[in-house]
Image 1 (cartoon, rainbow, N blue to C red):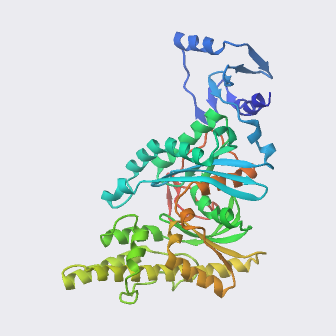
Image 2 (tube, rainbow, N blue to C red):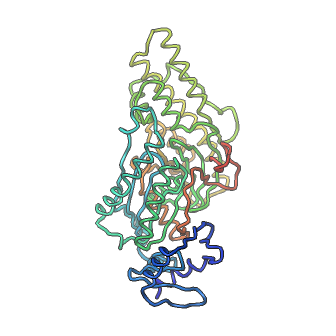
Image 3 (cartoon, helix red, strand yellow):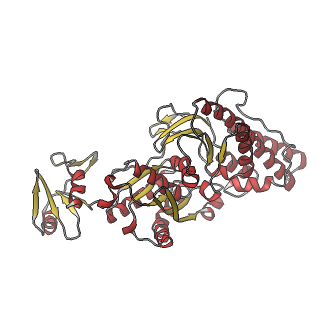
Length: 444
C-alpha cells in the first residue's frame, strides 16, 4: 500500500482534460491499436480512489490513464532520512564519464566506488573537447560505468536509496545523456531522482573529504568556471566575485594549444613549467589594480601569445627551454592573481565573523601544486584553515555528485522525472550574471 500512495502523490497532478503531466505535453493516442493495448494493460481489476483511477499491473507499475509510473521505494522517501543513505551518482558534464556510490551513516561518509572513463584520446587530435564526440561517448559508456561502479561497491540497485545526476551546467549533449540514463535507472528501480548542479558538487567536496561546517569560503576554479563563494548550505551560495571572461582552466588549455602541448592543458603546462624560469617572461596581473574579487584571464593568454611570437621572430622557432619559461611565467601570473584575489575574498568572508572560518579550493585547476601553495600561504597570513581535496576529487568525478545528492536528499530536495538538463545554471541566483545571459539563461 505505501508504494501505491507514493505514486499517487505524483499521478494526481495529471489533468485528464488537458492530457498534460505537469508542464510536459502528452500526445493523445487514438485508434484500435491503442484500445487493444489498453485492454491488455487493464488485465487486472481497477481501483477507484477519490475520483482518480489507478490500474495495478503485474510488475508493480501503476498506470494512470495513459501514463505509467514505477512506484517509488518507500524506504527512500523524505520521511525516513535518519538512517544509512547510499546514493548512486552520475557525472557527464564535459569529457569524463563517471559513476560512483557513496554511503553516509551516522555522520560518517564512505566512497564505496568511484569510476571515471576519460575521453582524452578521442579529443587529442582536435586540441580540445568536441561536444558532439563527448556526448556520443557518454551515451555509449554511461551504462558500463554504472555497472562497474555498482560491482566495485559490491552493491545492487536494491541497496541504493536514490540516483543523483549532474543536471548542469555543462556541454548539453553530455548532460542530457547523463540525465536520461539516471531517469531510466530511477524509473526502472523505483528510486528518487536528484538533480545536482555540477558546480555545487565541486563546492561541497570539502564536506565529503574533511567534513567542513557551514559556512566556509570556497574558491571554485576549473576549466569553465572561477568563483569565490561563501557556501552557506547545500543549496545556498553567496558569490563574492569571479572571472569576467576566461576561466583559469580555459586559459591553461589555450596556452597549451599555443605552445604545441597536448590536452588537457593544465597538467601539461604545470609539468613543462617545472623546468622553466618564471622570471624570464613577466606577464600582466589582470585586475589587481581594481578593488573586489573579480578576475580576468583572457588578456593573460593574449600576452603569452605575443611573447611566443617575439621569441619565434627572434630565433626562428621555439626551443624547449623557451616553452618551459613561457609556461612557468604564465603559471606564476595565474597563481599570483588567484592569491591576491583570495586575500581580498578572505577579508570579506571574515567580516561576517563565521564561527569556524575555513578556506577551501576545488575544481580541476585546484590540482595545480603551485596554485595550491600560493593560496595556502595566504591562508597562513590569516591563520585560516586551508582545505584542498585529493587531486582525484578535484577533477570531474561522480563521488562529489553522489555526496551533493546525499546533502540534498537529507534536506528533502528531491526532483521529479521532469528534471531538465541545463547548459547554464549559476549557483548564486540572487546576483546578476557575470558573463551575460541569453535565451538559455545566465552563464555564471
